Image (cartoon, rainbow, N blue to C red; front, side, top):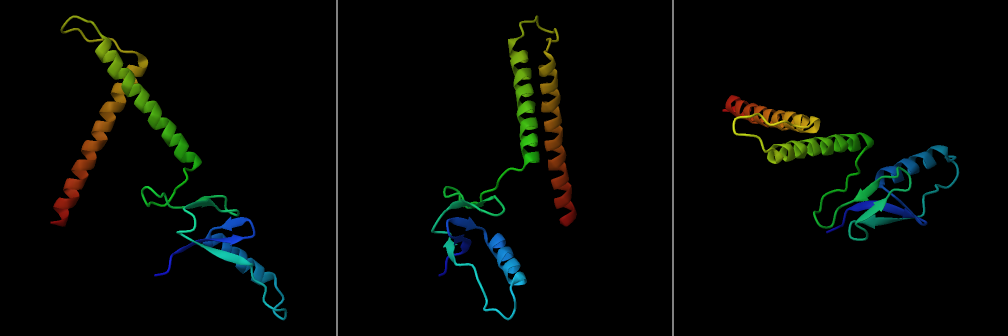
Length: 146
């Protein structure tokens, strides 16, 4: 059984297969066809050699997580903004729960919430609506397949 090649070492640098092959194509394109063929003095890196490395050319992390076996994925800048929005929504949901349980109103009175508490209630209800719509869509999708 041969191990999958996940990269190439050229000197002290590591390259993912895509960047290595692109570099080889560029080198071949600029060589004089009459001259002897020049190649990169490289050593293949197999999955067992390293688990994770940063490609010297494209600067992305390559490899697999040893604990889960999944490919490592780097969040893009837009993913961080989505992540920040998610954290903000969670904070507002917590504010709503805190506001709700910290109320000492008489029975039957509507409690007062902070602005974050109202936003949190909105996010909770919107998330419930999204989840219900997703379930309904899946049910109708399965119904159509039957």
